[in-house]
Image (tube, rainbow, N blue to C red):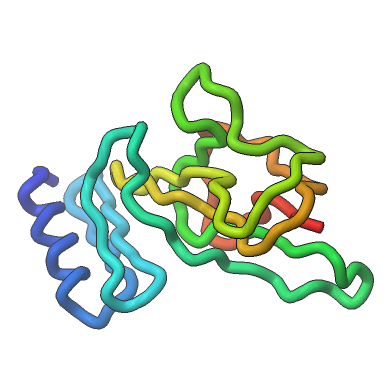
Length: 143
């Protein structure tokens, strides 16, 4: 599938009410999705994340009402640092503020920042770095 077809599909999703589109042509499959109507993106450089995507969060469990799960809102490649060779955004035990960048998920050359949904301390962090995550995967927990 050539780039112009992919751009056309992205534009279509951006103008329509659909939230996900999967198209397969020969041996190439393209998934285009957004988390809310009206949200769209374009390719950006690695240093400049394109958009912040809303987090899919679990309500606190009855066993531990003080932790907050941060889950992957989209499928893509998870980056724990702003660039290769740079230190990660956060580590276990770090204090974070609401809105602070925790990760970047790259999906079809669109770099989406994943921000902390609340202030607190990181008590769990995924081992995945520069690897694929599925929508809903647990990335971190904030206490």
